[in-house]
Image (cartoon, rainbow, N blue to C red):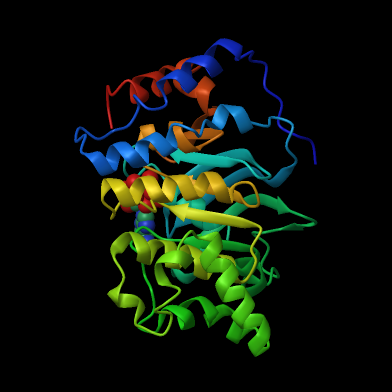
Length: 303
Ligand SMILES: Nc1ncnc2c1ncn2[C@@H]1O[C@H](COP(=O)(O)OP(=O)(O)OP(=O)(O)O)[C@@H](O)[C@H]1O
């Protein structure tokens, strides 16, 4: 599929987002730990890894979505680019989560829903009835708003999908460790893998859920406001993790937090009333929005 092309020239804006990366932190507190985490984040600048020529991983065209007779998405079209972070922003109820859930068919679990359009992934349309959703959800994993570990041990949480797949003991052992490493949790839990996951802090639980998603080796990770239940430090850890994970995975993240979108994403889509108003490289969308509604939203005039 064709890569995404944009007309902008963003040399100037790259420099400015890089310079303001630290200033953009949304938190008023400035105690030591936050400062330390923030200093880490200062090293990450998504404009440095923005790749407008990246291959299109999922090509979404003219998506309409209905809850019964209520239409929640209108003609949404956008590409999800390979190994880039795409952020979805917009006011409450604009359809961000609904859209995210169309990508791995999570809305199928809600009765009386209907979808039109297409989302081409490899050589098939995700929305087609015949799509194998179990396989799809292995390839397109999901992390939810609230960490939702199973009431099992840390090890068993990560091993879960692998056991379902019937993997050998050796493979399970290896992948559990690799996934916990990948989710930047290994060092904190390696000595207590057999204790309950429910004993972990909220931020650790969310990283465990990321490890659980990674264990089945997905290509894409969908994250639905993964930091909304976390404190500032745990939030920064997840953001840092996202910037690491995107080297190997394609990430789509719904966030209410515009600074978070600016800190971690390469591309941003702004939704309003079920419509995708604007989609562009993040730096461009925030610094030179093309639509008045985008400008009003990002400057805090509504939402
Ligand atoms: N299960 C459902 N049944 C009926 N309507 C729903 C359902 N889930 C969401 N909606 C409606 O669809 C619209 C889009 O909701 P959605 O949750 O996708 O928005 P959102 O932008 O993610 O909101 P938020 O930021 O508050 O999570 C809203 O009007 C919402 O009320």
